Amino acid sequence: MNYKEAIEYIHSTYKFGSKLGLDNIRFLLNLMGNPQESTRFIHVAGTNGKGSTSTFLSNILMEEGYMVGLFTSPYLEVFNERIRLNGINIENADLATVTAFVKEQVDKMLALGMPHPTEFEIVTAIAMEFYKRKKVDYVILEVGMGGRLDSTNIIQKPLVSVITPIALDHTDYLGDTLGEIAYEKAGIIKKKSLVVAAPQEDEAIDVITKRSEDLKSELVVADYTRIKNVRQHKNGSTFNITIDEETLENVEIHMIGDHQVENASLALTVVSHLNRKYNMIISETSQREGLKKSRWPGRMEMIVDSPMVMIDGAHNLHGAKKLKENIERLFGNVKINAVVGILGDKDVSAILSQMMPLCDKVFVTTPNNPRAMKAEDLYSQVSKLHDNVHLTASLENAVDNAIDEAGEGVLTLFFGSLYMIGDVRMRVLKKLGNKE
Image (tube, rainbow, N blue to C red; front, side):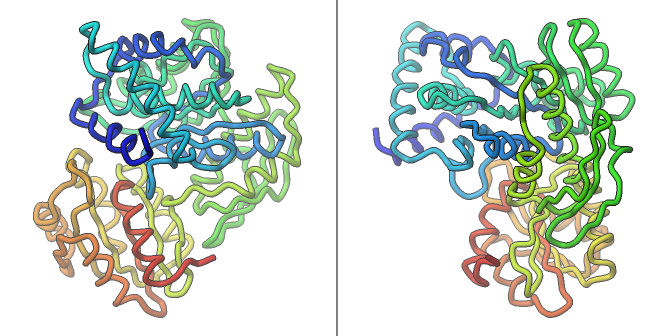
């Protein structure tokens, strides 16, 4: 199997849908010799901030000299982004070799009458096998959806379970209330383990607290009130943070927004308690440098400075609120031309209600994803909230039209779906050149 065949095989399994549950992944990994049992994991669940927090943690551990795997989803530009080792995407040859091995085990499953694994289950299995073969020190393992029945939850003894902010998303799978969704996210908590959570709404934190108490696990909630002296600019932030009476001053990150300051603080809280509980020694220098070197493309990313072009994957109410707040804080009354594309299973009206008042002109389009809301349907919703809306069904044309109108004093903003942002990023940089 070569790389092209591996990618085709992985994507061909999309038709098996998204099925929550651990029976299939358990059976598959057992056939593979349970590669996950040879690896130490930091397991990260939540609705927003999972990727950024995971990236911060990965880079901090890398700075300390560890070999670190980072498993995330979705990808923006190339599939290999989902499985990283020391900040580098899995090599094509490794992906092909490991995928061929996993496919052999899947074929055995099918011969034994088991259901075909989903795409996410197969990708999870590939990651587990790859990290075993590379003998990594730690894997930062991001949950795909939910937690309790997500295939990543096959791991038994994570060093720490991390829960980022919980909001309403994937309600057709996870429940209609914060409490129901928190129950699914808190499903990653294991017996007598360490849990570090971001501050949550009462309904969510109550569920996380009960789950931790029932399993006799230690719950630490990051204290964002101890974040001080935040200074923000369009390419990042600096701030002070106190954790367990230790203060770090002038911490620097190159991700935009107050929520990224909070995500970085969550990562620092995790590191502090890893040091305490496991006698790890992750130095202040590694913490600072790891945060400083962290990048997470597609999240309030200013991909071109002149003209100003920003992309953001905000795809739910919580994400849209954060995007709105940070744009208002960082850019004031700048003119905004927006390109928006959203998946049909998202809370479209909630996203639009936040963002439309900011925009001077709006292009609506269709992300290149089978779950995308058609541009025509999105146009009808946007038109109820805005009087300067343009329908551009082709994403490529929408990008070109928006960039052609970019100019001094205009922020061109692309948002609404992570599945759109990768295509946008590549096309914009091709047209305008890389900011670096």
